[in-house]
Length: 548
Image 1 (cartoon, rainbow, N blue to C red):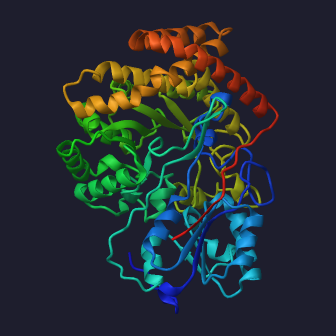
Image 2: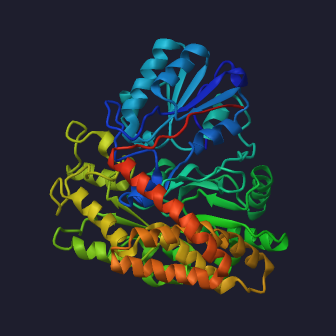
Image 3: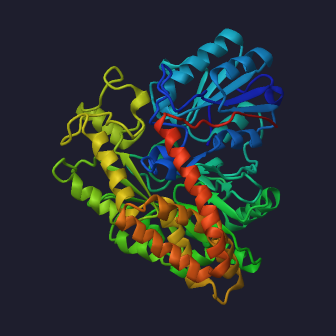
């Protein structure tokens, strides 16, 4: 991608600061933070109503780390700072370029950060990037020198006078930190958390609501950082050595769509006996285009799949029985995070119960529910803008357009204020009928182990044995705790008893001995967690400060 920009006079001698927007995040304030929109993907959009069973974790600003790894200038990353810490950095250090990455709900924070930069370092070049740049009026809303939409690596390399054809260096990044569930903080030890792998950005599919697709040019537009399976394999081997990992969270909108690259990676994994596990995003049609043996051999152990909704008419779902596909994947130990939309054009209050039931009936391990939100840059936004149904910022601030509260347009069938109730109903029904996502995940893991523990391929046996290891102790204890927690809910306690019995039968007397001890501890921590949540406790990420 080429940019018509004048290079910075200092070139790679320019001092660069890259920052995410300041916190705190899980609160209601004048800068656009919202209690219901924390800096937690799962708590925000997936396990929102699961209380102490909610999966809590944070994810780094991976785009900033990718930028830092690919520019030759002295570069500092300040991630998840408070406003006070950001001001301190402006007072203590002198910079030539300051880059800010954000999403549109955080526009007030970006405005304030630009004002602070102008006050403390008036000669700095301010660059704003990320999903916020889909908003075409951004150059008028914030006091920035450059708005960078799309490939920030290419833009910064040109701005600093670096060669444009250099390969992209992949930084060593773990996928999450601060993981917490049932009131227990999980250790961030080397090897315990998957590495982030970013093969490409953008999406060839280009759904009408997808801001990622819009950010990189729309449908059919994407940037491959690694064109071949050989390039990708080399990166993964380096991440394996650097981070002591054997699993990867593949941050790619539809990784398996690049079939030639994926199958070449599979050949190399087989040739070098790599028993890696891959967490991927994939559309249903693409998943179905692979045999189950190919998915298992490739190490796909977890998949985030758009289910969207019955009669949604998206081509990525055409002709696919998503119920059957989910069951098939789970029967081979592949965990599924299904994603459904509330508020598609044909949704009505009188049909919403059936729509929710159709989604919940998938019995996915995790289920994301999002409102049908018109994000700037997407064709959905343009359609609402064209027909006059889009709400102005004075009617509906950008800070609330995060997909978990209200529509940012007038829906044809749903009255304003009804939508959040429908959304919460979906989350609650999924939780009540299917139970905690942790229990579902454990069931799928156990099913995969039972199928593959004696597989003739040593590479496959090794992966499933590694994945099932927590079932012998900590996960068995978690199920014991869940059984006790639900002792007054007959349907759920039966489900937990059956799961625990199956775990005991599979792993024997040692697991029977340790599960109650671990389980009692987990049960007490869970009760404490729920008391904290009832008092309004909020979870915030630590600040990171890193120089290249």
